[in-house]
Image 1 (cartoon, rainbow, N blue to C red):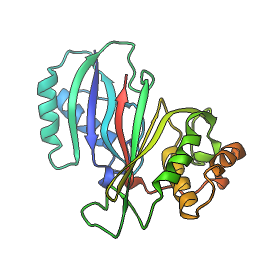
Image 2: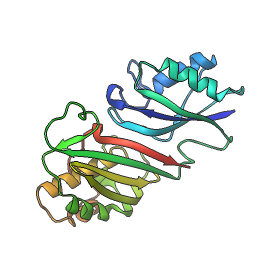
Image 3: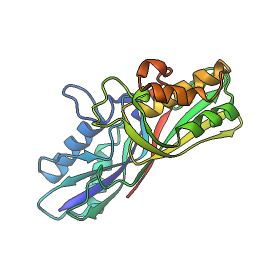
Image 4: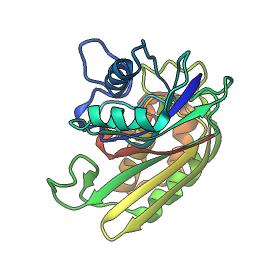
Length: 242
């Protein structure tokens, strides 16, 4: 039997999604709790690996087990064991044998939150606080990312993806008062791609450079030509479509 977990978490206190020996990770904690409940060695396969400090409103991961489970009972038991964590299981559902949380994904949506203003202790773990932000120029920059490109300039040196080519379906900025949200949709992303794109846009708008510089950076296919990597705390895995 194969089951899909829909999970939400505040990633501030974890070393990302992926299991790491002697580190507290989302995957490690969930596998430990599920193995106790189901009395089996449970291994999770996620739609994507979020980094240290990155949050998720909808992360998805599947696991396989020989027996049928009571989904609601397991969900209740799991959330009870997670009561001291900033992790919650939203739903558990059965999926067919060919389903894979990563490879069956049609679309992922990430959101990056920025806040214009001074330090705010209540929002510090969920926003990148910036002194100013030109949303109109930022949208001009974002438009250059849409489409199929070689994103070598916008991936971390530790990225293990076989190909740097990705297709950005949509990249939009929205503003409400001093809060700004970047909404990016694609089937898959490179390691740190969203954060490097946001950091590069921030640098271009701050320096009042021409937004067309984005295309020049894409054409260079070299990370050194892009901007800084935006902080992890502003990034949310918002939704996954299958």
